[in-house]
Each structure stands twice: as C-alpha cells, then as structure tokens.
Length: 315
Image 1: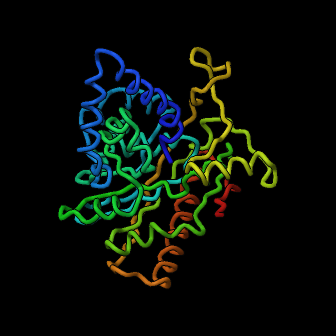
Image 2: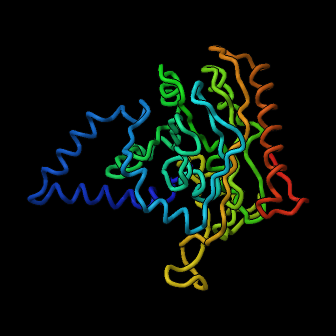
Image 3: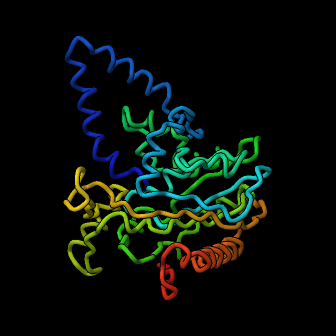
C-alpha cells in the first residue's frame, strides 16, 4: 500500500525514541503518549481524522510540481452519492494517489467540490507511534472492512474512499514502461460498493511505474520467492528500487525520478445497494469495472505519452 515503505523504514526510529525517553527526565512524554494512544485506539477504524492545514501544506504543492503530478477529471462526480475509487497502478510508493487524494497538492477539492476523500492504507501503518498522527491528519483510514463500512455508512453523502486494490502484490510487478495490474481475482471492493450502493470509479495514474528503476526477478527465482514470502508475512513487498541522488539527477539515490504522472479519474459505474450481494452480482460488476478501466486506459494512453501498441495486462 502507499506509504508502507517509508513508514516501515522510520517505524523503529519512533519506537526507539519513545522507549529511550522512558529512562530520561522526559519520561512523562512517553507515558502521556501511551495514554493518548490507548484512548485514541479506535479512531483509524472510524474514518480517521483530518487536518486541513496539513492537507493544504505547501510542501505537497512542491512535491506535485517536482514530477509534475496532474489530476484529470473526465466527468462530474456529484456529491449526492458515495463513491469507491480504485486507483491503479500501485507503483513503488503511489505518489500519484497520495498527492491527489490525501493532499491538496493538485487541487482535488476544487476539481471535485463537495466530496470528502479518504485514502485507505494498511491497518498496521495507523498504529505506528508518532507517524499515525500525521498519516491520519491527511484523511487516511484503514483499508479493512470495518473502517470502510464506517466511512460509507455516514448519513452525509459525498464520501469517497480511495483504494489501491493491487496492493503489495502489484508492487512486485512495477516495471517502467509496463502496465500489469493485480485485479482479476480482487473482488472485495465490488462487495463493498454493493453493500453501500456506492458508485465504482476507475482511476489510472499514467507514469506511476516510471518514477523508480526496479530490479525485477524471474517468477521462478529464489529472490521472487523471498519477496512473495515477506509479502505474505508482513503485507508489504521488499522491492529493490533506486532513483536519483539528492543533489544530482545523474547520480544514484533513493529520490524518485522527475517523471510526469497524470492521474485520470474515469466515469462512475452506478451500483445498486444490496446488503448481501450474490456471487453473480459481484462477478457482473467486477467485469463491468475491468471493462471500464481498460476503456479509460485506451482513451487516454496516447495523450499521456504511451504508444498505441501499449495495453493493460490483468493478473
């Protein structure tokens, strides 16, 4: 999921700082935070919270301008209903999805007035001491069923949950110039939409896979087996990737490459409300969604710099 790699990297740091403070004259900071963590434990399952100042922070605008990231609206999304947006591809860090729907770096609220976006992330990220407060301030929520049901069950319409449905498995297929999506057997998002009568919206970020160079391993190699095993155990993929250096675009480093990312929001697919959807209903709307996503890709690929011969691959 987006944010998984950077947060996983800094998680030990925040935990160690909190533990270290217990043995200093500032021990009460750690104790007070643990009390707060206990009292605030259920917030990630209840839609999280958001801080407009952080969402509007100019750093997000600078980040969006670096690539640059562009958000394209193809049709209106009226706020008189709820939506489930499925964002593809996952990429390494999901810069397009995060900047567009968790921040105001590209002016999302101006393009879609009246909608309240909630980016769904791995549940474990919302319990990392210190980091959780910042992540939730950007309007994120847990990707589990309880949290998503809570968001879409609110009486005020105009809720829009954003899910990177390909997840960690799709990150393993992040290769510059390729467009391989983990979607064929992912149907939980369709059940979610049917339970709440929320429209399905395909979203594709052209260029997301190009911001890092990635070491891809053969499917039958021990390296790929190791990646898949870690993914199953920890819910994130240990990909080997690199970009540019901090001070020079010609040097090696972990800064993403400045490659344009164009996120296109497609037409919504109306979905009826059915508290207990049948498998036939799920399969029907899953096929409709895959067809709509493929059509969105085909309509916009050439304007985003891809050759006409490029097509989506579903696994």
